[in-house]
Each structure stands twice: as C-alpha cells, then as structure tokens.
Image (cartoon, rainbow, N blue to C red; front, side):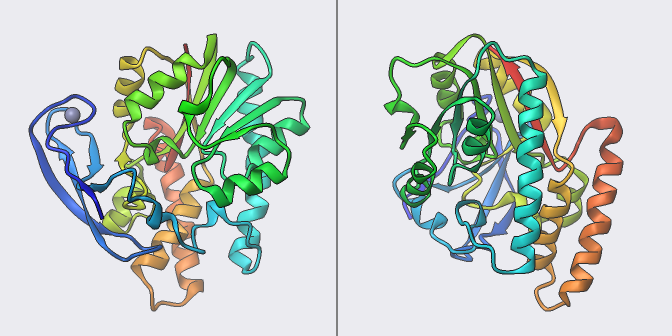
Length: 297
Ligand SMILES: [Zn+2]
C-alpha cells in the first residue's frame, strides 16, 4: 500500500496528533489501521491511510454490500427491504427542504438505486461513481450520466447534491466540498450523511464499531467536526436528521466482528438491544449512529 501519513490535522491543521487506537479491516484485507486524534479539534482519522492510487483494492470484496446487488441471505433480504424504505425517506428529507429545482447530483451513487428512485419521481439525475463495476450497473438503469469523478463535470449546476455515506471515503474532503459548491446553484442544497463516532453504539463497540470501516473510511466525524468543515467551505447548516435504522445495521455488523463464534441469534438480539439504546440515548444530544446534515450554499 502507498501509505499517506498525516502529520497534521486535515481539518484544523493542528500539529498535535496522537494515536487513539487501532481497528481491523473486517471486510477485505484484515490489516490493522491506526486512528489518530487531533488534540486541538478532536477530529479522528485513519492514519496512515492508503492514497487514492492504492485504495481501490480495499473495495474489492463481494462482502462490500453497498456496491453489490446480492440478495441471497436473509440478512441481504432484510437489508434490501430496509433500503427501499430508506430511499423513500431520503426523498422526503430532500423535498421537505423545498429545493429550488429538481436537478440532482448524487456523489458516490454506487449502483444507482437512489438515482433510479429519484428519477421515477420526476428528478433529472446525474451520478458520480469511481468504481467501474458499480458505475456500469448504474448506467444500465438509465439514470443520466455517471461520471468517474467530480472533476469531469463541467458547465453544470445542480439544485441538490447528495453524499450518502460518501464524505468519509473521500481524500481531501474540504477540497471536494469546495468543488461541489461550485456545482451547486445559488441557494442550492447539499445533503451529507455520515456515521457519528460519538454515538452510543460507537462507544459501546469501540474498535469493533463497524462504521469505522477502515481503511475505506478515512475520516470519523463528530457533529462539531462536520459543523467546522461546512463552515470552512462556506456552507450553512440548516438541519440535522437522525438515521435511526443505521444503529441496528451497524450494531449487527459490529456484533459479527466482535463475537465471530457466537450464535447469530444471540448477536442479533444484542444488536437490537444496542440499536434501541443508541436511538434512545440520542434523543437529547442528537448523537445518533449516523446523521444527515442539510446545508445551503
Ligand atoms: Zn484538528
């Protein structure tokens, strides 16, 4: 791997960076990765991390469900059912924010399920997807152009740009957000969903927390970290929404990493308990397992 070692915090440029703990890549290589914490702004990031040219192999796994259309196990079936419900709910969040038009760019569109859903409801859709196999599946759905990277898009302005669990995967997240700002209409909306490392399920599972997902997740945001990155890139945060299903999904995966040899039933029961607790405890401080941030240009 071409390792990229970050000597300073990519968010606040503080030099006081210490190792917090390490996590295993549970889905592809089973390598260990360290997480560093900035002592100035509390940002946590995978460090060292694979650079852009070498991260590809870490996505090369049949288990990497967000790119696959597999429908075999009961787990996959439940996941697919919930995903359909989630698509409708995501659309609701976008429309309730009263977008200025119906031109949408989905960054990290995967196999294009969200774009397909939005197109069906009258949206003009475009996607960005670096994985060629996922992008070709998206193209087969005829959901508009699918670009390999943001940089390939020229002379276009979108009313809404979405990043569903994508920002944590992007090298140079600030720079990418600035580029996306240039692709957004005045008063356009950006929607960013990311895992929340300050959630109860994150604290309970510690280094087994599935949403650390090293090294694919380069950045591990708190609400404060997202507020500062939005602030610095010139977006104004207008709303935050919980993703309450994520606590169950992430807990179930975390259980399977933590208790590999325990019965699946027992793991599922505990995941249900932790998922419920996580949502319950988040009612006041909004520290849900994953959060959706709605911001305007
Ligand atoms: Zn920092």
